[in-house]
Length: 175
Length: 155
Image 1 (cartoon, chains in turn green, cyan):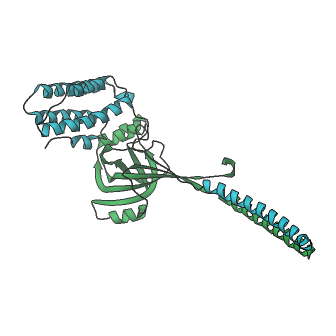
Image 2 (cartoon, rainbow over the protein chains, first blue to last red):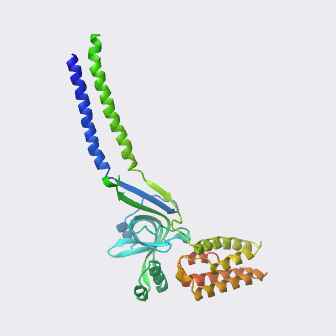
Image 3 (cartoon, each protein chain N blue to C red):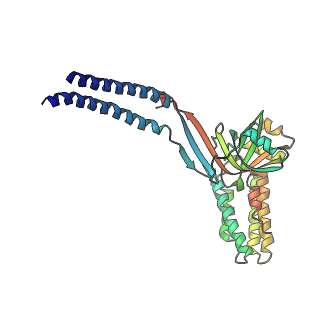
């Protein structure tokens, strides 16, 4: 009986050690989880109900303006003040986003991150002067600025609130 | 006594079991830190220049002056005109804006503000002319806030 009790105890201990080994394996996977950093600017909005670029383009068809919430990657941010940004609409198209009443800006290093924006999208004309100014803000070369001679008719967005999300992979080395 | 002979190994086993299982719990707690979302709310996340901060303050002060004029309770103040003077010396976000053209626009604004200050009638028109001077300057140097500045105009 004494031997049986000892054997049971040893098995219990070994099985628990095995569990620990499995946990170690799980821990290895979790170490590679994505760390999400979120910043909010302007009106406090949520990501809930945000539509994709494809849904946005489909909903804008035949409309002059649309109040909506959209999630898309950020192409570029005003390098001087962060007072505008452009979102990637795919197929080499982008949409310029300004911030309502110039009341808030976004971090200048937000390019490449993911934005969720809520506000009014509309088809609008951007004048030559404005286009040149945006290029100056983006520190574009003078030749590129001088090359602008025609206004652009494109989607523009006036955001009331912005969420910027950065997803960073946590590797074992960074721990 | 015989009973103790059976229980001692069992207690030893349970002791090791608890140690092993406790180790697992502490590792789980460490893993949760990786899932934390960091959230910050900031409307001006970049370093603002002296001129940008001055402009922002002047907008808010102009909005107060507008209310005074609309309610016939007051006018532009000497303090506001002094702030306009500081545009000449405040460090801008972009050093390239400090051109002779920029100085000329600033002088036009200061003149308009002085005219409004000394004028007891037509304050509404005088205030709107001052706002137009601001817009003209922004059209040349920083069109971003023009829409907001235009909202200052008294209808």
